[in-house]
Image 1 (cartoon, rainbow, N blue to C red):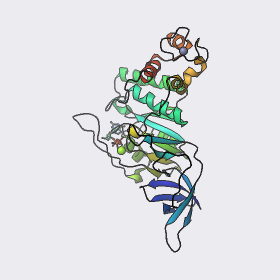
Image 2 (image 1 turned 30 degrees about the vertical axis):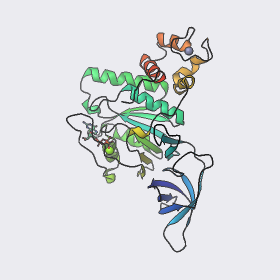
Image 3 (image 1 turned 90 degrees about the vertical axis):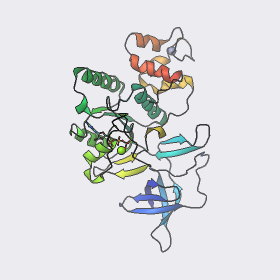
Image 4 (image 1 turned 180 degrees about the vertical axis):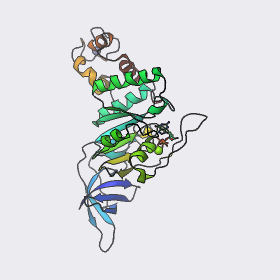
Length: 307
Ligand SMILES: Nc1nc2c(ncn2[C@@H]2O[C@H](COP(=O)(O)OP(=O)(O)OP(=O)(O)O)[C@@H](O)[C@H]2O)c(=O)[nH]1
Ligand SMILES: [Mg+2]
Ligand SMILES: [Zn+2]
C-alpha cells in the first residue's frame, strides 16, 4: 500500500492512505536512503510503500518514494549530519506582521532565499491587517507587497481576528501541501483556526513585556484541512534555516537579479563593489529594489538577519 507520512515521532510513523485511513508504521530493518546523511530516513510528507503486519493494526514501511523536494536542518551547528524536516512540499507560506511583533524584511528575504534554494514556491501572508491604522503603516505594507509581487511572490493581507481576507488564505492553501512558517506570535494558529475552527489550535496571548509571543507549537506534523490542503506546522522558524551556499550562487536565489548577473564584467562578480556590475547598475536605476539589494548584501557579507 502507498501512503503519506503525516506524523513522525522517531520510531513510529503515521501513514495516511488515499482512502483516508491512518496506520501507525515502523521502519523495515535498516531502511536507509542511499547517500543520505540524514539522521531520520523518513519525514513528514514522504510518500511510502508499506505493508500491514500479520494480525495487527500496525504496518511496516518498506520503501520511500522519490521526493520532489525536502527541507533539512543541521543536527548541530558544526555537524555534517542533517535532519529532514519535511518532504514533497507544494508551497512555503510565511506569515509575517509589520507590528506586534514586527517581522524584519531581512527575515522575510532569508526565508525567500531558502525557498529558492530548496525549490519550494513561497507565498507571503501579512497578518494583523486590523492593527495597521495609520497611513504610514498602510504605505509600508503597499511598498512591501509591491516589491514582492513584482518579483512574482504572491502576497496576501489578512486579519485572523477581524476576518479580513481569510477566504483568500483558505484558497491559497486549497489542495496543496503547505509549509507554514513565521515568528512566534504572528498568528499562524489563529489563521488556521479562522479557516478551520475544528482544529482548535492553541492561540497564545502575546507577552506584554517583550511583544514577542511565546512559542507554543512543539513538533512537525501534517494536518488535513477540509479544503483538501495539508499544513505542515513547524516548531518555529529556526528549523527552516538557510542552506549553505557559496558567495557566487547567492544571487541565483534572487529571481530579479537573474537577468542581470550574466552581463557583469567579471564572471565571478558578487555584485558588491566590482566595476562593470550590471546588478549594481540595476539597483541605481530602480530596476532592483534597494531593500532587496541591501538584504542581499547582508546575507553575502554574513551579517545576521535572522531576527
Ligand atoms: N489584532 C490581531 N491579533 C491577532 C491576529 N491574529 C492573531 N492575533 C493574536 O496574536 C497572538 C498570537 O497568535 P497565535 O496564533 O498564537 O500565534 P502563532 O504564530 O501561532 O504563535 P506560535 O504558535 O507561538 O508560533 C494571539 O494573541 C492572537 O489573538 C490578527 O489578525 N489581529
Ligand atoms: Mg501557534
Ligand atoms: Zn555584478
